[in-house]
Length: 239
Image (cartoon, rainbow, N blue to C red; front, side):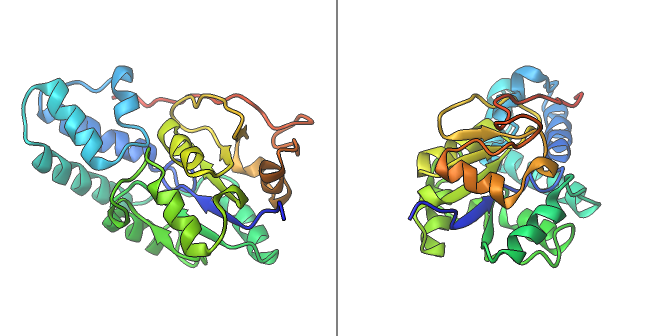
């Protein structure tokens, strides 16, 4: 049966507008190391796990210890998230619709467990996720397929029937490598198109029917056209 079995949501930049907070935390740490964060750093920051970004900062700054930098990044990001993580437009309406139709959904994030728990206990409190997956829960996190494979297995569903909702290149690559169809909602970076990816301008344009179309490969009108948008946009913050 080729039908939507579950939805796997990314967190940062997808459900909550925390990518800007992550960028701010990274920029602060980069500045301390003597490096000014800019657009060229974005592929190593946006949607990346903390250890990956820490290693990048140590490399470009030519100083620092990766473990210490990672701890500083996590602490800085956590403080900003704890101060308030705005929910992105359309989130509550979509989650309510999925719940009404009995479609299970889980959260699959590349953020550390401490950050995931802060968001789920704060901005996303009372959202009935089946479970949450953090960067600490698999041996490898995004862009590797491990998190999405683990989530599909935990649900007992084939990845091909679990739509992943993502905003970043690494997140989309992770989900696609796991065998999930991907719905991309723009955030900070442009996400390349592929046969497994459907694009929407905002979660305000997404319904359960749109998500079912991602599984069947039928255009269902995310956005304004007869078929889902195939482009993404960028809204890079200043350093």
